[in-house]
Structure formats: C-alpha cells, structure tokens
Amino acid sequence: MGVIHLHRVSLEYPRTKTMALYNINLEVRRGEFVFLVGHSGAGKSSLLGLLLRRYHPSSGAVYVNGVDLRKLRGNRLALYRRKVGVVFQDHRLLADRTVQENLAFVLRVQGVPRREWEARITRILRTVGLVHKKRAFPYQLSVGEAQRVAVARALIGEPEVLLADEPTGNLDLENALGVLQLFKLAHAKGTTVIVATHAPELVRAYPQRVVRLKNGQLVADEHGGRSLR
Ligand code: ADP
Image 1: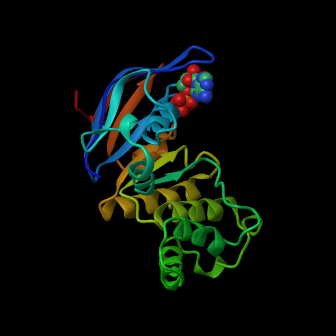
Image 2: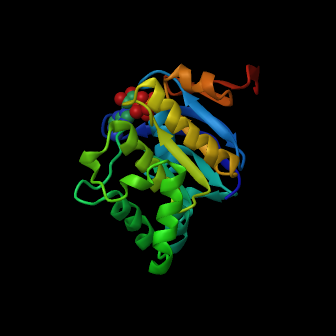
C-alpha cells in the first residue's frame, strides 16, 4: 500500500450536522511516521475513521494508491482492511480469551495456516516483551501490558499501515514511551504509522512529521520544526 491521499476532504456527521473536517488536503507516503495532533474535538478520530473506511467523506475523496476508498467493495475492501492495523485508547481485547487466543483470533480471520500461529504469536510477544503473559487473561495484565498486547494484535497481521487513536491516553509516561517504542520499531520496519495524540511528550520523544488539526481544519504540517506547507 503506497500513498494515502486525502483530497479536499470534508466530513459532516449527518445526524447531528456536525462538521468534523473541512477541506483537508493531506498526502502520507509509504513508510512515513505522522503524528496527528490537536485538541479534543479537532477531528483526529474522524480523520482516522475515514482511513478505516468507517465513514465516507461528505465531499472530496480518500485515495490509497490512487484508488478511491469509496469504490472498494467485497474482496478488495477485505484486503484493504487486512493491511491496516489499529490501536485505540482502550485495549479492546476479548475479555474471555487469553493473550495468545486474542492474537490467534487475528491469524484465523486472516487465514494464516494454524501451524504458523505459535511461531507468529511468540515472535510478536517477544517484540512487545510479553511472552511470559501469553496464557494470561486481559484482567491479569496491567494497563500498560494490555496496551502492548493491543499493539501486538495490531501488528501480528503485518499491516502496511498502523493507525492509532490516542493509544497512550490511559497510560503514564513510562508506559506511554514503551508503546511509542513499539511504533518506532514498526516504523523502522517500513510500516506507515499515523498516531493521533494530544500528548506533546510523545512528539518530543520521537520528532517526526506533525499534522495539526484545529476545529476540523488542517492548520500545520511540519517535520522537525520545518513547515511542509
Ligand atoms: P478528536 O479525535 O480530535 O477529539 P473527533 O474527530 O472525535 O475529534 O471529533 C470532531 C468533531 O466531530 C467534534 O465536534 C465531535 O463532537 C464530532 N463527532 C465525532 N464523532 C461524531 C459522531 N459519531 N457523530 C456526530 N458527531 C461526531
């Protein structure tokens, strides 16, 4: 999956007539790391929702590799979704499944042969430092550990794009930096990473491209303090 391109995208939530995004133009290249920042209500989740194809733009279009996301159906839509890993503020693990069962769930959905599951699960748990927790249930994990499992679940399918919506919102600084470290690893492997956050300490810890939204408008796009527009 190459370039993600939002072309003059606006989004209005029809039921409440809320304008969440206005005329957003944004291009994210393959392998980029982007922080999406702005106050609560600025439109960060809405923008991620467009990339997850949870919503369609009210006007404008979202293109991925030149293909309008609105036109993806059936198999091609399933394939697209498979290439996108997602992390939310809360871990959203299945409460009645162990860590390894939560991860196996993804592999089953993706049709990975069962004989590969154990190695894949061990490998990703090693990456997030939680091999010893593979038989634990979510309630037996600390908040930080559960969020690292959530990142493992997002990455186990080897997505080309990782989207995260306030992934450290429930974490103290130490755990937040632990999660950021996992995103850095994914980035180093070539994954495109987009992290919505209002935590300046994350941006400081990994100075990358920063796209700022304010009241639904894109008001700044900077890399290492240098403006891109
Ligand atoms: P952020 O992620 O930056 O906090 P959001 O994208 O969640 O911002 O919200 C942008 C605006 O859209 C806000 O005014 C919010 O109240 C509104 N909004 C978000 N989700 C919905 C929804 N499902 N229905 C109606 N309005 C929404």
